[in-house]
Image 1 (cartoon, helix red, strand yellow):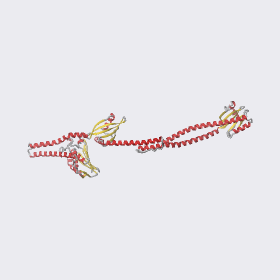
Image 2 (cartoon, helix red, strand yellow):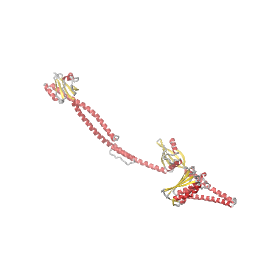
Image 3 (spheres, helix red, strand yellow):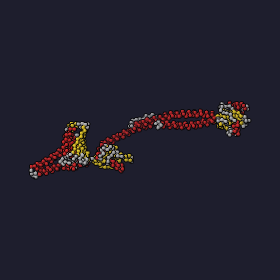
Image 4 (cartoon, one colour):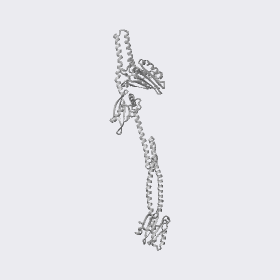
Length: 585
């Protein structure tokens, strides 16, 4: 609204101030001119009375003196002369309403009779007898106890006052109009640069830091405009510096191998990088919060540690294990002056270090364990043949068959070790072909229909193929499918299920093999793709199908050789899901 704007406020302030001053000045002028006109009339009438009194006193011809008195008076006034002998004379007047005065009234009035009693000049405002005319009467004594009185109606003075009042009010009105015009002109001239500054400030809030205010004057407003332009340049400089710092900080956080999470006091996650997001996903999966609507809240145990940091106001360290991976979290409070506004948590994945230690400790033991059993069996049964324990041909053939099977097992173990070593050394040769993914997976699952039915396991295939032909090595990839599906069937109880899902998009070929078997212990999840990994023996349903512990390690190397990734999710007594994807080209 206009009244709320600076222009309106300034114009109204100036107008009210000038109006107040003019109001006071008008009242004072009216009072002054009212008294002035009365005093001027009294002075003129007293001068007339003095002239008439001198003429009456000096002229020997009394009639001539009275005739001259009629000439020297004001046409609108009357002169009354009371001689010492009691003769009373009044002059004529152009004012027809001004009647003759009575000599007795003049002699008996409380104030006017002082002319006769004391010989003083008198003046009085009074109502003329027998009329409602207010008149001004002045008197001057003359010789021989006489007096000259001059009286005039106040209507003449009031008319003069009215004319003066009109002139004063007209001047005041003109002054107010001129003041209004001047106030709007001045306020507009003052506020115009301010309006431009406001528009420039709005542009600054939109990020338009190149906006400049024109400098129209060289007074304080002009200096304010120059200061505003300098502020805009400085603000642009600092915003650019902050943006560069933010980009630099974001680049550092993104490239860090450690996870970084910034939280506020309410437990909302403000900043996370990719390692931290993977950690959060595992926590949500483990706590069955995958489908939660609010993924911006820090899950347990992050929230518990955050409250501890806020309460204790010091750094806290905690080790967290999720999905078989061990994380060390260091949480440090963030201060807003003396107030803790949140915390920053740095997560370090210590799984690889522990895995390396475990591998170094277990590799020799695992190889020794895998070779000791067949070697012991070869030695024992060969000694039995040499010592003649097996007498019949059938017994010798049976012992020879066991020796043959164990030697084949040792050969497979050595060959798999060699294949794995070649893969890890980068000498794995892939013979890629364009394969029909649908027919290929149908053929592979047909091989496992029999084993699945023998174990009372439901084997189901689900396909979502946007692209049917995929480029990969069919023999090597069949090795991956065979290992994962065979493991799923062997580790799933009766009346269980194994779901195989394949999907292909324009860029990826995705496979998921899910079972509802016994699951993998959480501590073993990080090691399932390592050499000689075997789950707890209680999980092996068919003991005739013991593996070498190298299948998953070989599967991982084959998938990675195709440029893909493989991972596992598992919960004890609920099931396991192996997932891998490779590029379609």
